[in-house]
Length: 518
Image (cartoon, rainbow, N blue to C red):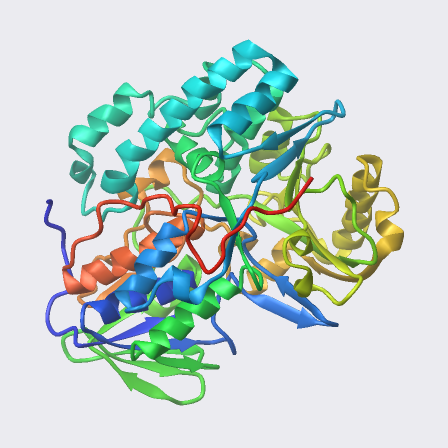
């Protein structure tokens, strides 16, 4: 077990800034290690990015809609003396996704290997089905090589990468490029997209992303996708309830505005906009990097400026009808592919032939909408405001209409007329919420911003300040921000991390069932 740096001096009372998934995970792991914890949250409820909008009888998840690796939730809850089974009612989605393509074909993505092999055999033939089996085996090996040593691990320098797992990952081709590596198993362009589009979550096109980021495809297509009854916001509610029961002080409506330092420069208290002062021995900041840097009063020195991930244009639509062709999650791919990533990451233009994620949560939990109504989230990746400084106040209405027309053309007939409630979210809205460059996906996972090269959670020059969240290690996504909270706690407690997450069995939760979809 390697030794990593930790906060020095007393750490009896820790203030966590932010009650998002990272902050709540951190709080639970700190509580489990015997620390006293106060969580200060600027909003009126827990969740951070994983928030909720309640309006007109709708409960709308305003952040992530895809839940994978729920065992990491169980680990955080267990640290606070609770469990996933007690706190959440999870549904395992089957299919995890439905993928629809420009040629009119569709492929259901199953985490069960036999069902997925049969699906691929039926749409792409026996050779591709055999390639899927080889790919699945490779994905499992990539996951095992990474989880313990690279994802669920603190680093003080690149030397921390050295070890047997690094050699295993290299031997697996993890330092090559994702797109070509997936292509070595599968030749059907539709299947290549299904197993490589996830790199967009990391802010890099598949052709340029490290093959190691196939670990995200493992989480989606092998470990499985889940949905909590009550919506994704049920996750932070469960974590906050468990933290409060374990003794954390959760204070909402407390926007942190400054850190008070003692004579040595050590942070001794946190001050809030309402004039409050909370003494502390250590601080964990989970705000996005620009806000964290403002609190610290400085930006860490980097040889290369941070590069931000693409952003997202969101439509939250309440409708008076549903479309049977939609699964809980439907990937609607355009004909374009490489040019799409060029537009998002280099040209700074909206997608000319968009690939979209359409989530229909009321297919699994009808209670999220009023009786007779249905909820749809349409996520269109778009450039961040640094890559594409688009005037969204002027552009958003027309872009919204173009997406609705495109979805109608792709089979959601009458969508525009069926909308009875809507909310539009643009990069300008993400920027107003404090997200760097107007993206909720924070810093991209380029090679120079991955692992020990990503902004570290132990801040240089700060004796008792730690960072958590998607801008620091290990990175973007629900599983990784939960891990980031645990790693931040370990920087304070000196505790060791678990040996890596396991996949939650099918009977986890209070009545797990497969999603009933056609």
